[in-house]
Amino acid sequence: MNSFENKDGILTAGNVNVLTLVKEYGTPLYVYDLEIIRKQYEALKRSIPVEVKIFYAMKANPNPSVCSFLRSLGVGAEIASSGELYLALKTGFSGKDIIYNSPGKTDEDIQYAISNGVHFINVEALDELYRIDAIAKNERRPVKVCVRVNPIRAVTKVKMQTGGGSQKLGIDEEKIETVIETALKLNWIELQGIHVYVGSQILEQGVLLENIDNTLQIAARTAKQFGFPLKCINFGGGLGVPYEESEPEFEVEKFGKGLTALIRKASQEYELSETCFILEPGRFLVSYAGIFLTKVISMKESRGKKYTVVDGGINHAFLPIRMNRKYPTAIANKMNLPSDKSTIIGGPLCTSMDVFTNEVELPQVELNDIISIFNSGAYGFSASLLYFLSAAMPAEVVVQNGKHFLARRRGKKEDFMLNCK
Ligand SMILES: Cc1ncc(COP(=O)(O)O)c(C=O)c1O
Image (cartoon, rainbow, N blue to C red; front, side, top):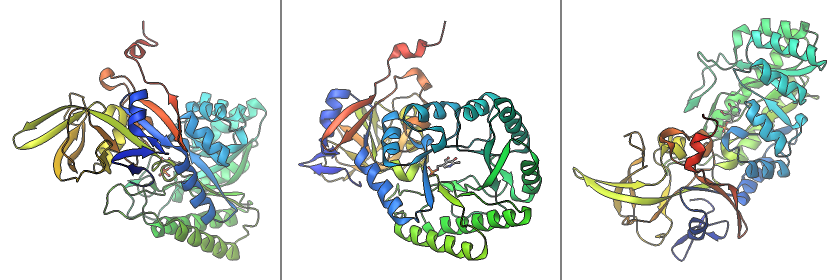
């Protein structure tokens, strides 16, 4: 349950009684505690060497209040669309604090990124490299580029894999020579280094380190082979958080020590004194900080199984519900009661996909109880099917040291006519 507390049987978030939040802002509701984000950031920052810079992967939680708070802590932004770039600029990041990844950047996206002076663009295909060069020429602005590599070495024990094997993402390691040679020849491209992101939700720090070791080797070997100064090695994100009781906590201090050792070792073999190293965590920074609160609106029994239907479903919390079906769950108004009754919690949508958990142990559920799903701060609101079945979007609230404010207003049914005839 992390930093949320049980005070006299009621759940609190950032020292605020969540039932007060429900009364004021309604349900379904996301609540983000900024102090937990700070704790996560500081734990990571403290552990890693100073030459490693943190760029927050905005896709994990693009709420503007969350982004500007992270900006105030000193992180950069990793963006994956023009929409995210717009948000990053609006929330206080300047171009030089932003790096841009995406396997499908349109010319308009590239032009928007270049005209706003993003720090790096990570190139994911040869055709894209030519387009970046042409647009940079048009803009009369040279562009710093890293090549995103899909490594040969298979990644193991990674639930959500984005590197290794056949991928839409990045350029296969065995094919990067052409891309590097081209990048070095093109007039408006300034080749900076290599980017590798192998996957999300990696719980074992050792697994992430193995991949970072591999990335260091690929980057250093490539720079040596082609004789360009290695200005940047980007290790991507992927630091996981446990969703089920059986899953281990990511050991951030051990990770930091391991990372320091790997960089030191590589620096003895290769010239890395001018190299900047990058991590792009999303989930690790914001997941713990969020809870999703949803109200019980109906209960029934069907052929021996008990069902609890709540007012928020996969339209509001798609990934929390579908990908991690055993999220830590509690009843916010019954924190002191024993969890000894099992029920299946489902959202209000008319699809059998809309089920939170196949069976969860909770105190006796009653109408109007507030179900709380922890670890919902990452890939919650932003990765949901927000238009599915036209149910109004949830509100988002920020809490911090006993204070709270509305960070995104609740959607309205009228919103579904926006931009329509
Ligand atoms: C290129 C890139 N970097 C970083 C991240 C963040 O990953 P995570 O939230 O697992 O740290 C993602 C997530 O999809 C990504 O695509």
